[in-house]
Amino acid sequence: MATSDQKKRLGDKIAKTIVVKNPDKPGQLPRILMLIGVGIAFFIFFIVFIGSMMKNSDAYKTAITEIEKSEEIRIQTGGIKGYGIMPTGNISVSNNEGQAQLEIKVLGNKNDMHVNVYLEKENGQWKVIEMQ
Image 1 (cartoon, one colour):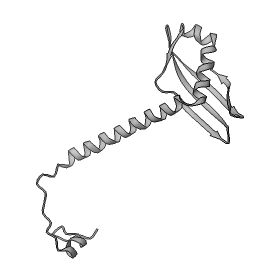
Image 2 (cartoon, helix red, strand yellow):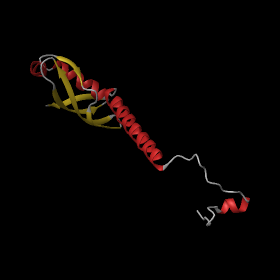
Image 3 (tube, rainbow, N blue to C red):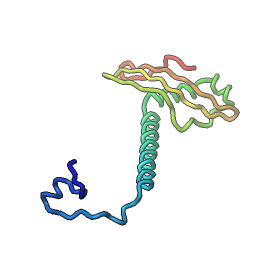
């Protein structure tokens, strides 16, 4: 924190060290690019982790079960062949009760569509309240 005109910190003065400039020290641009790269990698990991957590939740599994039972969705998509990589929305659980609002991309043979599913958890069981 406290430096001198010789670039010595207080600890350097007390220890009577010699401070020299490192000629191999990388420039500022590579360090900034590395920091940006680490930030992007962390952001991608965080998004994938959250998506994975949502897909493994009981609320998501209940929503998928109800989507697959829906004849209307099957007709509009031409048959369900899969689901999007990452659902969006939120899941809130407290004391074995909760609510969830999920938007799931349904991949169809003819058309893809987004399905919004609203669920409630009562007595440990998720129930679909509304599906659009």
